[in-house]
Length: 388
Image (cartoon, rainbow, N blue to C red; front, side, top):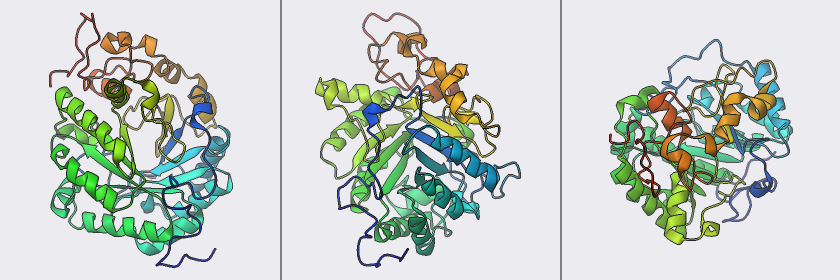
């Protein structure tokens, strides 16, 4: 495939504002039964990374783990993903996926199988414009880059690497030239919350199609960071809801499903709540229910932030374990949730972060301590960590 002209949008991309599908229309989100398939399947292809980010879930290390799935095992995993149904969305994550020399081969293979391949690389010197061109040629459908500060000083301090901000901005600009739709991921904690308005402007300036705002779950190196309080989270979610109304990009939250409750309370009409993000991914998903994560060693988790395994996919059991394991089935039953999450009138559209509940209590069905909302008439105990 010929490389696109560096001064024009690639013919692979749709017209500006098309939401970012470059090759085929996404499946209808409302038609997907999350008990049968995930909207999002994340494969952590490696934990190797040159950065030492303060929030790193994976506690990434410079060297690759010899127990990683091999190239052939990875292809078998992608074959399994294809069995979920047409147009399955697969996110290649890390660590830094570019630490794997077979990354392009895996993207090409997944694309050939009809999977919708996306990537979350680290902002390092390995993510060059030439590599981004190769990813575009291989069929990558979205590039998700992390910005945790609106300036080089704040971002690089959080990421633990001088120059990471500049490299991330360069990669975002290269993605635009290659016609790859851009997503920006941002971590919300006490140290970053004040930078969110400036980050909103930066996301718009970069021409991103989606801003994915992740509310810290204390796992990995993220345990040393201070989360925002439930009250501050409520303020930020309300603000994000207002941003979503006129921003030139979509807004979604990760590990803060009560964003949907906040949006509904603001608008008093559930039909006005955000529903999808431009690549066919409905926003109403949470760990184990529309979302699944395969670790670098092949363990199937409901989320990378909920490291309770439903078993290994090396034996070919990805689809059956997602559909039938006790762990995943329990996470898809909001009426089984405990505490105030289990009686909340919004439990079927929100349900709280199962990952955060697990991080604080070891019980993925417990209540989410980040949610400030208390259902009318609830007189039970508050979640562990709720007052932190």
